[in-house]
Image (tube, rainbow, N blue to C red; front, side, top):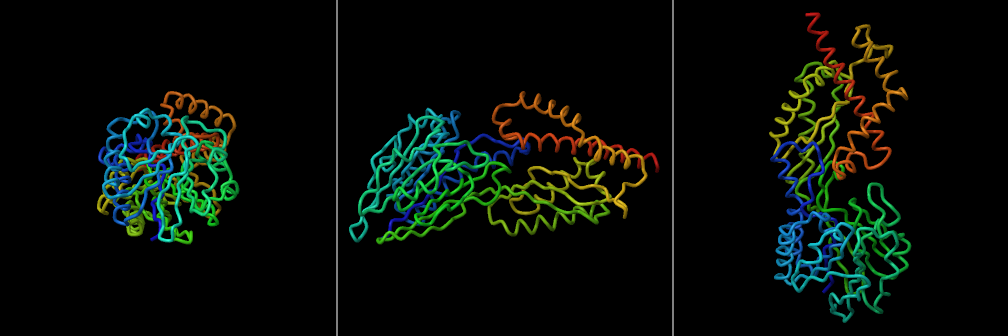
Length: 425
């Protein structure tokens, strides 16, 4: 019989809401409970597939705010695996290291939590007498600036060896540097499979041997968009490895851009969005689809969509509600007024003002400097986690600043356009 296991990481149980746009209380509750649902689904999958083990490669928790209620939920799910005869191998990641609960919680006897420089654990003896050993390395602190690989034991001779490591590898955008090492370093160590964690996007870095980052099983905001899942691994008596990705996340975040070019009437724009929403919902099998909608293109409706943004939000939320499990998290307006055949603005005063703002005010160094100073001051008044979400780096801050300038000026011009239209009636 082969050795089969589920490889997951980065569940971030009971992670606090990271999106400012989740103003809908029902949607907020859905997202808040999604990480628990992901763990329950992983346990269901392990039992249904009759695997030998579950490997959790770090960041089971979400830092120092972890409550005992979270820990009790975890213990209950691991107990279900224990009762099914399925072992759990667990390493602590950088977020787990911040949690006092991590150290205090009593887990079922079938759960093994690796410490620093832990001995390899015998996981199974195969039919041909060959053994399977799991190696793991936890770190007690939230920072690991040096590679943990030198602290791993050598492979057990004549056995199948699986390594568990929470690492940023050579670095990944949006993730802290943690226990850095290269894929080549892992390949040279001699293990048959490396079960990694830390980077939230799935990637198979190598197949000889397998070096797999499974990605997180449940996204928490629009920056963790797309279907999420876990990896099922099968290793036969001869050491051949097969992997299979399985979707887990019940709630999927997606960005949807709809081009409304040519839409003249309000109903035309709504029809374009309705068709795009229906197509995407048909493609996504997850229980819940949470969308960030972006309207683009050239349409004479652009000014009205901005002026009546509250009505637009109500209309589109209503349309989404008519599709099973579909939610609108936020609406972004990047559409514009049509230009004439010479690509010049029309001679209406508001249109001339719009061209002046777009071509001369927004690109000006003085304007960018001033609006950046305002943005930085506002960011300092927000909690650290929100600051990291909105502007994790220099380029993100620049994008935030320019986006605010564009959207703010467009909103003002839309109201001026509306006022001018009423004045001409």
